[in-house]
Length: 169
Image (cartoon, rainbow, N blue to C red; front, side, top):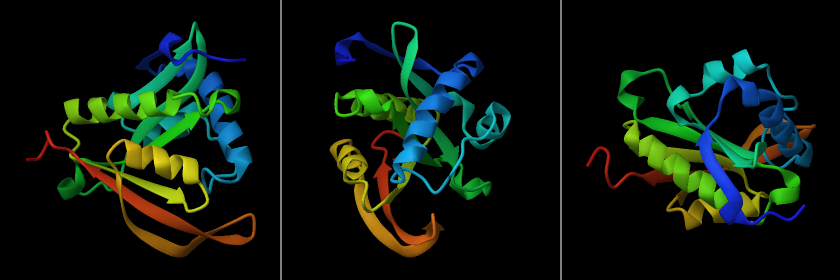
């Protein structure tokens, strides 16, 4: 199904969206390129780890075609303005600008909520995600080699960050 990105609306992700969000997440998990996770958690487990103020859904009509969320990188007060980015787009909709719109909206939401640094930890093979991040102002700050095993293979993680020009200046 072809989607005109102009017909996609970005808004708050609601608990009622979870089954659709979970389905998109499972598609990302199935690629083997998006996450170390091998299954999607329950809504309660997932929501517990994210910042409620910056959970976004991309919708075409009422169908969720992508989502984005932030999770804190630490519980320590010094890092209260630092969050890790997660973005997933339905497989059939990838490459159509939805990820870019989600990430830009997530950046806006993060800044409205006092986040001064966004960071990503992306498999090195996930070139599309790294390009998306760089197009939205993230820079590569390092690589953690063989940081974890995924399906029995050691994987590297490319670290990216974006510093706000508004918050914390």
